[in-house]
Image (cartoon, rainbow, N blue to C red; front, top):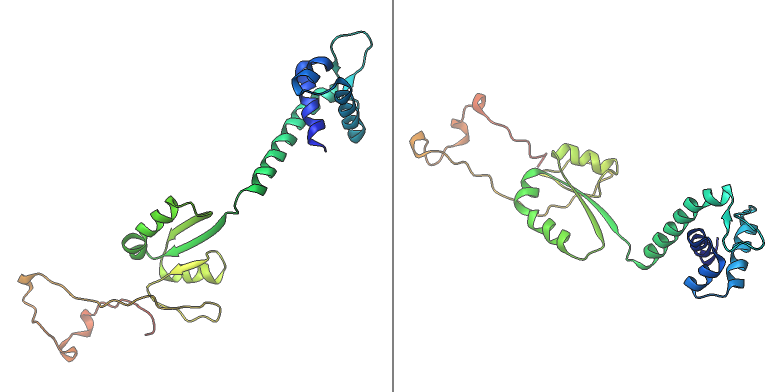
Length: 196
């Protein structure tokens, strides 16, 4: 449908007068008549009742019903034109373990959200195993995990490594160094950090 015809119909529906519509749109009255007839031909429906000698027009029942459709059509056309001229928005889903999201990436996320990048950022905090499953199932684009799980479908690259350090109270009476053979396996605390 032609935008000019829709706009003309909506103005005519508002003024209910060909002369006034022509004045408000800065057009000749014959142009208004032509546009309304073109719209009616395209729809195959009479939108106005034409009566000689009256200074105003009356919309048909279909004409009254078409007002809402015309407004929607005009809105969709405006949205389409806005969409054509704006930069595309990219969506990025990131899943990360809590420690990285909280301590490492939080400032980065804030900077990205404050920037003018055409990006919608979706960040989630999950367990390492869950993140691997999300990547496998294409539910997230990028994952940051504590350890790697073997997979044919995932590319894993280490970003950095950290040492684990045991700290204790000065009152605990633990020696400065302990040989592994002196450790009791029954008291072991196992932190799964992957096969490596």
